[in-house]
Length: 422
Image (tube, rainbow, N blue to C red; front, side, top):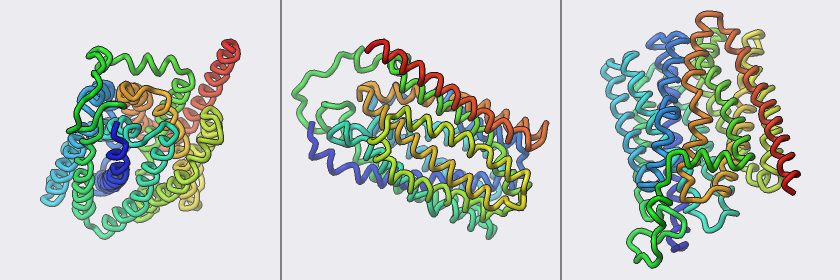
C-alpha cells in the first residue's frame, strides 16, 4: 500500500468533511426555523419531517453499507455530496420564488436524509484507509469530529441571525456553496484504495484480490460481526436508545424554544453554536480519554450523564424564566457527552472491524442506532399535540434512563463472560 499517497489525503478529507458539516448545519438550521415560523408547522408536522429525514437509516442504511464496500467509499462520498448540492440548489430556488411549501419541505428533507446516510457511511469506511496504523484511527476520528465542530461554531448562529433579519434564501445559498466546496476535494479521495492493502488507483496490482464472496459478503454480515463483539453491541444499543430519546426531543425543541419559551430565532441559532463549541472542546480531549479509559467505562459514565442532561428541557419548561441558561447548559452538556462517546465508539469500531467489512458493519450499527428514530420523531410530535409539551419532555429523560440501565446490564454480562473465558 502506498502510504505516501495516503499521507497527503487526510487534510483534503478533513476540509471536505468540515465544509459538508457546515453546509448541512446551515441547511438544517434554516429549514428548521422556516417550517416553524414561516410555514407554521405543528409539533406533529415537525415530527413527521424529522421522521422522513431519518427514514433512510431504517430502510436504506444496510444496502448503502454494502454498496460502499462494493463500489468504494470515495465514490459513494462524491455521489452523496453531489446529491446534497442539488438539493440545496432546489431548496434555495423554491424559497426564493415562494414555492417552498409543506410538501416540498418533506420531499427535500427525505432526499437529504438519503444523502446523509450515504456520506456518513462512506466517511466511516474511508477513515482507516487514510492512516498508516490502527493506533492513529482515534486521532483521525477526533480530528474529523473537531472539524465538524469548528465548522459548526459559526453556521447555526449565522443562519439564525440571517433568518432573524427576514432573509430565508441566503443561508440556503451559503449551504449550496459549502456543499460544492466539500465536493471538490472529495474527488481527490478516489486515489484511496477500496480496501486495506489494495493498491491505489493507477498503480499496478501485485497481489490477487480477495474472492468475490469475501469482498461482497451478505447484508447480514455486518450484523453478525457486531453481535460477536459484545462491547460493540452494547455501545450500539446504548446509542440506539439514546437516539430514540433525542428524536423525541428534536421534534419539540424548536417549538419549545421559539414558541413556548419565546427565546427568539437568534438564540435558537446560538444554541447550535454553543453545542459546536462544546463539542470542539470535547473532541480535543477525546483521544486522550479513549487511550486512557476502556470504552465500557466511557460509555457507562456517558450514559449516566446523558440521563441527567436529558431532563434539562423539561426544567426549562417548568421554569421559563431560566430558559436561556437551562437550554444553553443543555446544548453544551449534551454535545460534550455525545461527542466523547461517539468518538470512542467510532474509534473502537474502526479498530476492531476488518476494513473490508467496515462499511457493512457501520451500516448495521447505523440501522440499529437510527432505525427507531423515524417512529420516535413522529411519536414525539404526536404526543406533544395530543398530551401537551410536557409529555414528550418527560418521556425523553425516561428513555435515556432505560438506555443507561440497559448498557450497564449488558456491560456486566460481557465482563462475566470475559471472566468465564479467562
